[in-house]
Image (cartoon, rainbow, N blue to C red; front, top):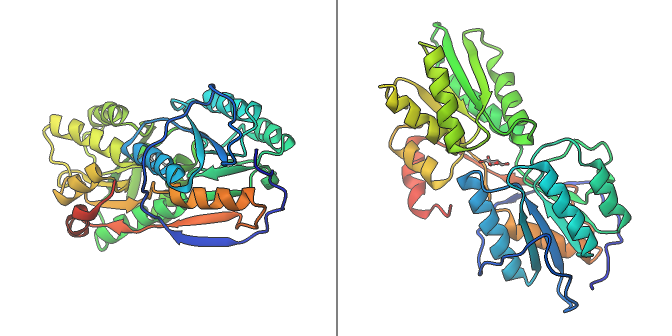
Length: 330
Ligand code: AHR
C-alpha cells in the first residue's frame, strides 16, 4: 500500500487543455478483489454510466490513461444511479484503495459517503461533474468543464443568429439528467444570456436524460404539442441526434426548419453539424484521463494541487466541424 495522502490542498485555478488518451484498456469492478500490494497506486473510479458518446469516450480516456500511468484502476459503471455510485465508493473504501475518483451523477447527497472516505484517509477527486457539498475539504480537487460557460456560449450564438430580427423565437430545450451539474448549469447559463431579449421564449423544457432514445421520445412530444418550434437547445449531442430523428419523422428539416444547438462535439454530433443538421456545437471535452492520473499521483505523493482544474474548450460551426472531423479523437 502506498503512503496515504497527508498534505492539505491549497486554493488556485489551473486551466489546461484536454489531452489525448493513450495506452491499453483496463477493466475493473468496484465490488471484486482486494487491493494488491505491488507498490502501484490503486484508484477506484465510479463512473456515471454509458449514457452517451461523450461518456464512452470519457471512460476510454480514463482506462487508457490509467494503464499509461501505471495506475491500478478499479472501475465501476453506476448506470446513471446515485445509489450505485455510493455503493461503489463504499466498496473502494473497504478495499483501502489509495485514491477515489468519480463523476457524480447528480450534484446533491454526497456528504455522508465523502465524509466516510475522508475518515478513512482516502483522498477523493471529482472529475467532470461537481457536487454541491459546502465542505470543500471532502475532496481534493475538481477537474472538468465550466458548464455555465457552455450554456452561455450556446445562448450567445442564438442571440447573434437572430440579431436584428423582431419575431418571437420559440425554443424547446432538452435537459440533461435531472439534478446533474451539466443540466443545471447549461440551463442557467443559456437562460442568463437569452433573458435580455424578450423575443426568445423557451416554450418547453424537459429532461432527455442525456440519451439518444429519450431525446427522440421527448422531441416527438414537443413536436406534437407545439406547432411552431424555431430552435432546439439540447444539453448534449446524443439527445440532439435523437431529436433529429423525430424532426425528420415529423416531415421537417433539422438545421433549417428547426435550428439546433447542442453541447459535446463528439464525432456523431460533429458529423451532423458538418451536414447542416445541427447549426452549432459547444465543445465539452471528455479526455480527462491523463490529467486525472497526473493529479492522482500528485495527491498520493502529498503534493499541492489546485482546487479547480478547468478544461479548455471551444465551439464549432458547420465549416469548423468539417475541418476538425478528420482529426477528431472521439
Ligand atoms: O457530464 C458531462 C455530460 O455527461 C456530457 O455532456 C453528456 O454527454 C454526458 O452524458
